[in-house]
Structures are given as C-alpha cells and as structure tokens.
View 1 (cartoon, rainbow, N blue to C red):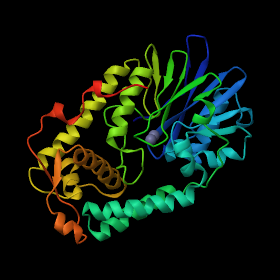
View 2: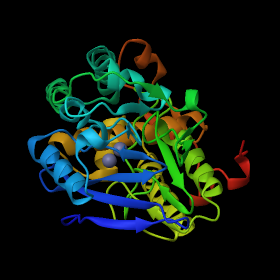
View 3: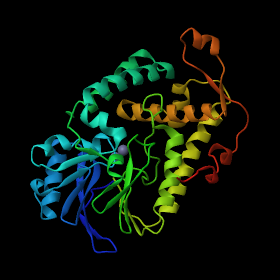
Length: 347
Ligand SMILES: [Zn+2]
Ligand SMILES: [Zn+2]
C-alpha cells in the first residue's frame, strides 16, 4: 500500500475516531486509532515499535491533540508485531491501562517463553513440510529476528474478563488470523483489525503451530463478524482505507481463499509434500515471504486434510520420520471447498 494518511471519522452519536498512520516496517503501513469518549482516551494498536513507527505514533497522537500521558487505555486488536510492538516504547510514557484478549496474553506479556515454544513448533512444522534443512534454518532465523524487536509488557486486563466491553467500545472475539483477534465497535463504526485485507487473504498459520489459528477458525470468524456488524455503516481497517461494503469484502476474501486452496488441490493430483504444494501455489519465494507462504500452505493443507478432501499417501515413511505426502481424494469443485454458511451457528 502507498503512504497512509491521518483522518478523523465520526460515529452516529458524534464520537470522534482518529486514524494514525504508522510506517510499521519499511514501505509497510499500519493504522492505529484513537477513540475519545466518556472521558476515556483509548488508543487501539501501537505499530511495530521500530524508531520510525514510534515517531509516527507520537506524531499521530499530537495531531489528535494528545500526549501519551493523556491515554487512559491501550487496546490491541491482535498480537501481531505490527500492532503490539509499539507497546514497549509507549509503556514508559504513559500510565494507560493495557488490554488484550485472553488468548494473546502470553505473546504480549510472556514473550520470550512464548517465542521459545512457538519456535519449536514452527521448526517441527517446517521439518514436516519437507523443506531442506538449510532452508529451515534460514526461515527459523528470520522468524526469531522479526520477533526480537519486542520485550514483554505486562497486560492490565483482558477482554472476556471485562465482558467484551471497554468504555464505549464493544468487542467480538474473532480467532483465526491471530488467536486473540477482536473487532471493536462504537455505534455504527467497526474497527476490524486485520480480518479483511484488501485484495488478498490475511495471513494464516496452521493450528499445529498456534492453537485458535487456521482456516476453519478464520472462516467461522468471518461469518460471525458479518452477523455482529449488522447495521454498521463504516469499517476501519488495520492497514487499508475505510470501507462500507463488509459483505462484499468478506465474499471477496472467501473467494481468494477458495482460489488458493483449489490451486493446491489441482496440484495434489500427484502426491506432494507441503513444501511442494507451496511451490505449486506461490512459485519460488525467499526470505520472510517464503516463511509467510509456507505457513499459509500449511494452514490450507491442514484444513483440506482434516475435512477429508486429501489423504496421506506414504504413512509408512511418515512413521519412519519422512515428511507426509498428500494427494486429493477425488475431483473437488470450488464450492465444495468451503462449508456452506448455514453451517455456522452464531452464539
Ligand atoms: Zn495481523
Ligand atoms: Zn497487521
């Protein structure tokens, strides 16, 4: 996306929501939001915590007429580094109460332990994917490097314990893209974090790495978001411009997911490892992008396998420690890949 910009939105009851543009990583922009209502100044998301990200965040607050010390709350839509990394530098400038969803507490407040655990699960997933060992080492190095920016910050409260409401903000838990992902709503405006990203599907990783991640959770969350957001007029996004047509965006996202998984299924006429499916779907990739696409492919294969659309062809070799090879069971049409919406029960 091109350079992001500062903007102010207003809800039906006149609550102002300031959008703060932040360059989270070189050429990668994210938005934080500031909601001032009922005597609360609530910051939602914090950028990555890099020098420039922190500077952008402070500038954005200033544009909204505030200093970090004026914040009463800092809330996270989800615990991905481009949203929570900024807590580290912000923490020393404010006494704001820090909140996130229960399922993201470990990553925010006990980061080193969580990182150690997830690195090991990632290593085991990459080995099982059939990548060469030098590729695995380099991807694990990249993973650890991107997370090393952060130092644990204590969390003051969690969302479910607050009844999914903080001041004027109501929340809904939407696991999938991240275990503790939430959307927030003030009147007729919804802040939807990274649930719906323009033109692509949000990042997904297999549940074997991160419980409450994966395709199935994400699909259920899309349907829940659509229902919960009934009557909302405006949707504010973690990275892209505001939009009004949630149903269309959700359908486009579902179609993007179907396209990727159906490309994987076409390749799976032959038995392939996850690494081979990844090459067939995304082509040759390197560095951080390779880590992202192998995780996405792992999430697709996990979903297709659990739903009985593909099988493991070499279980005897798997018993001996070889990576699994998958093959599709039969021709599967695109509309069989995703379950029908009526399967979802909204509670
Ligand atoms: Zn994210
Ligand atoms: Zn993001």
